[in-house]
Length: 404
Image 1 (cartoon, helix red, strand yellow):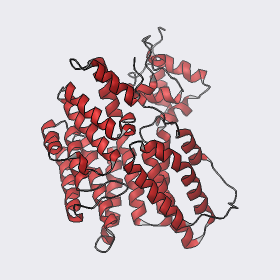
Image 2 (cartoon, rainbow, N blue to C red; image 1 turned 30 degrees about the vertical axis):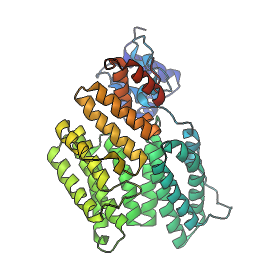
Image 3 (cartoon, one colour; image 1 turned 45 degrees about the vertical axis):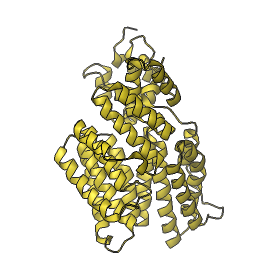
Image 4 (cartoon, rainbow, N blue to C red; image 1 turned 90 degrees about the vertical axis):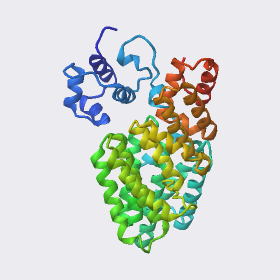
């Protein structure tokens, strides 16, 4: 019980039979860095990295690493594992090297299945559960078809397969399997590149940019988003509206990355570029994959204000948007969580609780897998607003957060 964190990591790594290079690779770090942690030559990693270490070592209790004697379930901070994740993962990792002998599926039929799955994703409050039932079969069929066909048919199948991986990205995000996020983002982009389809490449890039952003790889995220947007530019005069929508969504992602790194001017400059695109596309336009639209651009403005910790800007943007104008229930739930972050930054416990409660009722599985919501609920549980202790407990229970 008296061992420092570094020696605890080494103990559980040895117990798991895992070499230092293997664990370091799972963490995206070097073996030398891990050795420095284990020997105490560098500072103890912060909570996000400790969580990744605990997950890699398959520890259920973070106290195994921190040694404070108080049980801290890894799932509380790392997020829950959806019931269907193992099935989706199996479909993604069932590698086949032999020739496909079954007749390939119809590519137009696969494309229609993908279109319907996107509709389910946006219209269901339990969208992860719905996608969890659809994705395994869709992934397997799209993979088999892309392998079985040749020529132009294979190119078309790869475009659909790229889209399937882009949809899978939404399912695997914010779950305790970060390697799957990178896998589906990389596959989405690779299949699009093999199909030589600029629009599919832009969609795959949009998914990869979010993985890079969440990993703090700011410059790589901005470079990829800029390249993908510029790839679309020569086609925009004659291309369908979705090509312009994707270009606008990439500008919005660049704005988000700049906000994450605290660059106010750059963030708003790219937001304004994306907003101009949204205005040109009209009030009724919405991009299926990215939800890019006029209403979501206003929601992005809220997020920029929150990330830049300028709550006045964020609140003005929030007051200008009726959340009911966001058609996607998942995206609407996320917006309400962002508005809750405004209240949390201002120390307004009752307001935070009210917005999180609204988010849960709109999209129950969005809030259950959102790290910001989870952190706010943990804080509310520790320090509930006056007279709201039972309301906090009720919301924590509905979200499925396992805290005592």
